[in-house]
Image (cartoon, rainbow, N blue to C red; front, side, top):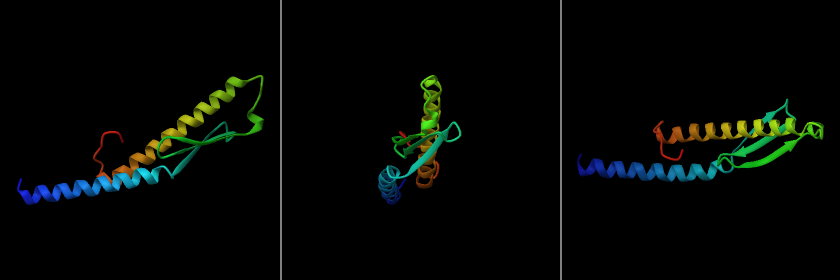
Amino acid sequence: MGMGNMNKMMKQMQKMQAQVARLQEELGERTVEASAGGGVVKVTANGRQELVNIKIDPAAVDPEDVEMLQDLILAAVNEALHQSQEMVTREMAKITGNIRLPGF
């Protein structure tokens, strides 16, 4: 590999690194929402896989069946995190051309 090709490859890598850094910042502001129980529990997560909001319809709060509410919350959280990860994967693929980078 010639020096010119090496320099070109290094510039491409630096450009990709800058794009990834910018995307990571943007993903912190992008959100996905998932719900469970027909919408009685709604969870919002950002592209950093952080939960940013949980809404629970008061009708879902039954002191006699706390376990059901816990299950609904878990289902909504897991789905929101799954959607968030898929969003990250899609956006990273746009930058990397489907090359899997460690940590993404």
